[in-house]
Structure formats: structure tokens, C-alpha cells
Length: 371
Image (cartoon, rainbow, N blue to C red; front, side, top):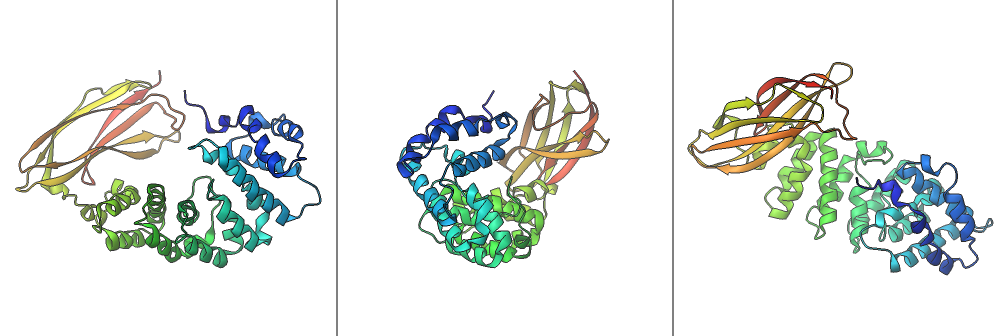
């Protein structure tokens, strides 16, 4: 079983902070800091709580007479020291560094933004910038637009990731829902960025926008579609929710044929009843009935029974492929009902549907029972 992210904050991780802390602040009492981190409440903390608590313990160990500016200078220098020796690929663990700014920076905006610009070059400040956006929306949005043209890729990434409408674990920022044009200005600047992590952030931000205002997301997609293959890939990932919904405006933009050009036959649901922990097996034949080769997106959906008796529909992609005129494709698939932490199964009647180019072709029921 994979280690939970929160459990990566080990004793060794904290101990490895000693040298960079003491290079910046030689008289720092590291022993007291370490003991205060792993107090009686530590095991009950989730990931963000642990980040916040490490930050609290760190700043408690600094001189009592320090003002906000002194704390910021320490953070920037401390970040610089950590960056010299930190293992690559785990920078997200150091997102505790800017938490102090997240909690205390709204009254010292200019200093906070300058520190964020430096710290985010090592570890993301996507959560940190949100309270500042709430407190000073216009000024911070203007800074984020400037960051989208910054020479450092992590600063550019912060511009798009920080302004996501539905940033996971991030505070909701009401002004962003009113200033979607500002988000689009940032995405326009970054859609063709040379760094994949930035393009992925653009995709995620576009996907968030599509859930709130699909017309703006579609217009943005129409503006950029077919500029180059890299942009197309970014847009397609950004339109993933609309594609799963089979949106009639989005489907043709990515070259998908109409469902009327295909015919689904011979659907077989192998098991009419399965237990939680088993697999549901199904198959069918798909035929291109048109006189041209077409791009076909093949998906299925499960209507999961909820505890209250209603259903939640979730779409799963099988494949997409070019099919030649009159070509038949045999599709066979299993859906695993193994127990996972992100989904709770309830015994009773469920349903499966087959979706071809956004159009659901059938819906058939089966029984899911407890082990």
C-alpha cells in the first residue's frame, strides 16, 4: 500500500531541516522545535494540518521581537538553503514554508507578494496566494497577470494554478468567479508555454472554468484549437469534463464523428449479479456505418447506487480510435468493484451504459451485493 502523503513528514524529514535552519539562524533551538512538531496531536492531523503545524512550530522558535519583515526574510533565506540539498521531486513537502504568509500576509501585501515570488520558485505557493486574493483581489490579480510572464516557470505556474476556480484544498475565492476574463488573460499567456507542468495547470484551470461557465471555456477552446498539437493536447485535457458530458459543441472541435455514423450491436453483460470485490464483464461490437473513416470515442458509465437510494453517474473512457468505412470493432472490458478508499459501494440495483462519441447507446441493470 502506498504511503499516505501526510506520513512523508517523518522524524528524518524534520531532522533534515536542522542544518538549513541553523545556517540562517544559528541560535535556533532545533530540539525544542522537533519535539513541538511531534506533540500529542500530531497523529490526528491530516496533510494540510501537518503543514500548518510545522509552520507554527517553526515560527514559535524564532526570536519573539521579530516583526513580519524579519520572518519573511528568514523564510526566503531558509528556502534558499533548503533548495541547495533537497531531493528532487518532493518539493510539495516544503509547502509548509509559505503557510506563515498565508496566515499573516494580508496586512503586508507588497512584502508578501515579493516573498511568494521567491519562495514559489522552490515550492508552490498556490494555497498561500488565495487569502491574499480574497483580501486584495485587484492588486493580487494584477500581480498574477505579471507572474504569467515571469522568466521562472514555477512563478508562471503559480499564475494559473493560484487562480483556479476549484483548486483542491484551496480556499474559495469569490472574486475569481466574477473575474473569469482575468483568468482567461492568464491562460492565454500560458497555453503554449514550453513547460509541461504549466500546460497541465492551464488544463486544470480551463476544466474548472468549464464547470462554472462552459461557454467561455468553449470560446477559449475555439480560439486556440489546431494552433499546434501541443496546444490541442492541453485543450483536450482542459475540456475533459465537457467531453465526458458529450457536449455537442466540444465533441466536433476535437474531431469526433456524430454518434449516428456508428452502430453498436451484440452487447453482452456477462454477469447479471456480482459481489463487491468482483469484476463486471461486458462486451459489444461497434461498427462504422458511414462511408468515411471517423474518429470514435468509446466510453462506458456506471450508475452507482447511493446510500439514500439515488444514483451517481460516473463515466470511464475505454479508448478512441480511427475506424474505417464499414469497419467493425469488438470491445471487451471489465469494471473492477474492488474496495477503494475514494468510493463507498452499496448493495442493490446498479446500471451500466455504453457511450459512443458522447451519446449513451444503452443502459442495462445489474445487481451488486455485499461480500
